[in-house]
Amino acid sequence: MIRTLLTLSVAAAALCGTLARAQDALVVSTWGGSFRDLIDENIGKEFTRQTGVPVRYVTGGTIDRLNKAKLASKPESDITFTTSHVGWLYVSGNLFEQLDTAKIPNYGRLVERARISPYHIGSWAYVYSIGYRPDLLPAGVRFDSWNDLWNPALKGKVGVPDFDPSHVIAVSAMLSGGDAKSWEKGQDKLKALKPNLKAFYTNDANAQQLIATGETPVQVILSMNAYHMAGQGVPIKVAMPKEGAVLGVDTMAIMKGSAKADLAYKFLNIALSSDVQSKIVASKKASPVVDNAKVSAEDARLPGVFTTKEQWDTQTIVIDNKLRAEKTAEWRKWFTENIMN
Image (cartoon, rainbow, N blue to C red; front, side):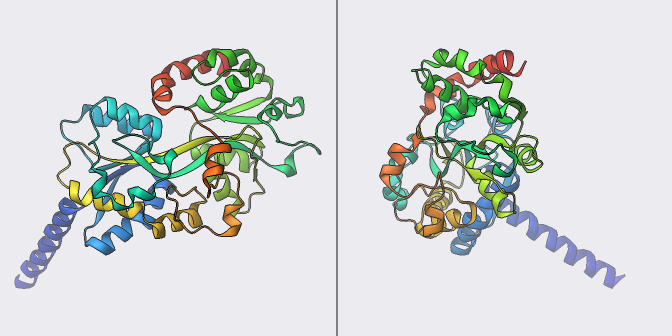
């Protein structure tokens, strides 16, 4: 009986300790899978090493987490990672704290394209470009320009995302003499791509499956996903069209009402340290968002890994983040009705 009571007491103490650590943890909202692991392995563990504070993650889809945050009476997380344009939807919902950049010493190293707003800042960057399997395409097919995506030789071979058509909408408008603001100019151009479209992928895992199996040997693809697959032996290449590739910046912000704002600032500053940014580039082939990260010569040669201001200025197609946030629903509705159906 005494042994049983002692066992129960030890178990209860362990449970109390676990609950206490969970309550004391810094809570980070992010995507699941490899992106959650990216944050934990490169930022979270270093944060815990420096502060002794554990990090707990809540995960979900980009829009699902936004909707959940809008409905919550108090923030579920202290920090939220989201895309640069969806971050503006958090801002308009009064969900992000305005940042005191004096509490983020490494903010001074942040590149211009990653200074998204007074409320959310870049954590890493990437591009959406043309990814392709040379082993599954006719000889001589090249992707020197986005116009090459319309090559009749690619009939029934192209995959694009269905959850965010802003990339192909902006590109089609640009090739038609417009831009994202005058996106209607590209509608006919985008409709002309329909014979080449094979599938519309719903998430990163779906995209990787479609190109790995060869069902869509050409994709408008997230560069980080393409390099992850290349590392697993899939013979995939990423093009850098002469017009540039569509820039994406994932961002981080402190939730308004967080009780751990001081720790959250520490987390953000660690995320922007040169050591952490260098590790993110080395492990995930993202672009660093600070100007003092160390990047290997091999990684610096990869399309979409930017190490100079000239590359940021000349190799990116930039969609205004606030415009993108405002237009996302309209663009998706038009895309569903006119391209997917």
